[in-house]
Image 1: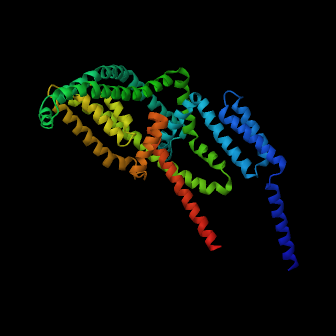
Image 2: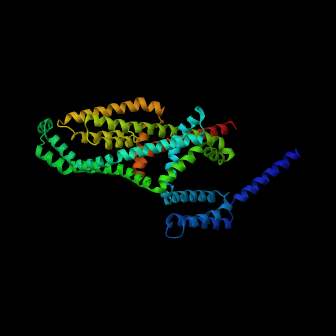
Image 3: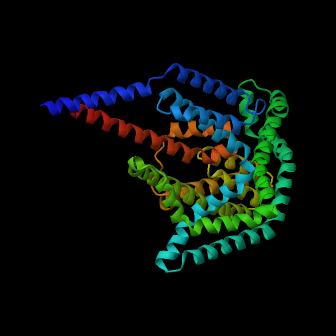
Length: 425
């Protein structure tokens, strides 16, 4: 019994010491206030006041000894988050080859692993073989396809004005006029509205869409055309592919032991979602671009290569991508033949059939089960990411939203476990 009292006093004393260590003294308050002032300078005077690196270093140096204090800890975490955002924004051009190499390595990792495990080929040999095949395909596509792509892209931009004017003439001729006359709309009023309001806006929208989409292609072309990037990206991809399991293992070992098991489970779930979506969608997008180019060429539609590339890029954007390529292709089809309804109807039927095959046959096969996003959440993520990050935001909106949903579900599961444990205790 005396021993129990002695242990309880020791525990109470230890708890008192810990609470007194956490309680902020007047000096701590002064240091934390200085940290807040510097944090405000980091927020509003990053470029004008002093170097963000210096401000960040001062914040960490001042507050790290007080990391047991919750206020000081939160200030440091906020400073770290802001510094990381500033750092990546500043060096985004430098990181571009590394990000592309990481994307290619993540995309090609299953193929290299399959060659290593099934055919007993060393991992470095598999990586070299796959990278050489990809380089050969890219060179062939650039040499054979780039001149045609540029010519068709310039032609479709010049023809957009003609397409919109012909669409106006098509609307003004035929049964539509007779139907509108019954409701008191004269052809003159309709013509004026179409030529002065609708046609210019349609032309601006189509030009903006095409220029924005292929502006990304031209930007990537500038990156790839640099000698340094052309050399460094295959090398970086090779080393990442060769050491991909080692990189994964090192990242896992950096996680603290207490959180390692839970973090690894979360990582595997995210890796499964990203792997299925990125690899499966990329395969289907390439298939979509090739089939659309060939199919529209067989139908007799002008600019099939440009429309095929556009269709492949927009496949990453659910709902809106299909609607966009369907509208653009229908407009282009209106110039391709003499009888207007025939090319438009044929193009729409072809694209609709292809879309059904991709959604109900290819997507379950290559991607598996759906990511699990509700249509409302999916559309909301498209709007939000597209608004803040443009076309790149549209491309990454689905996997990013899926990761956020997985994180929320993990947090809810952990919270339920904590509540159940508290109830048992």
